Length: 94
Image (cartoon, rainbow, N blue to C red; front, side, top):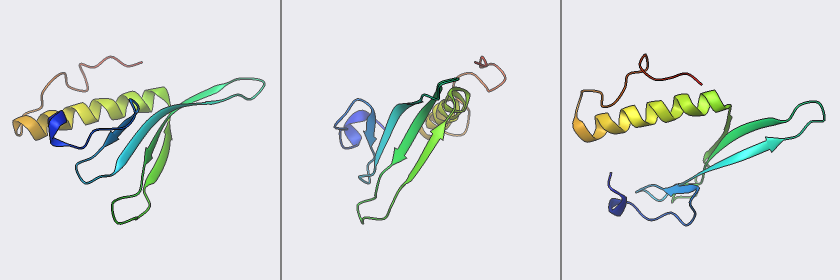
């Protein structure tokens, strides 16, 4: 979907979907003394009817895997049934 087809996000770290649901992406740092832990968080807010959303904390690798799948499926949604871009086997692992 083109940027002008959906409501604008209020922050650089948020996307507001066409149905009005806000998806926030942020970095979370947990700092235990022995080893800090970093996560990428997704907060899918309430829908227009007020139904609760969901929240997830992902490792860096999980976030990259999700990004790959989102890009793959966005290409499918835009261009039909053929994958667009590198396949999972072609993508570098981090």
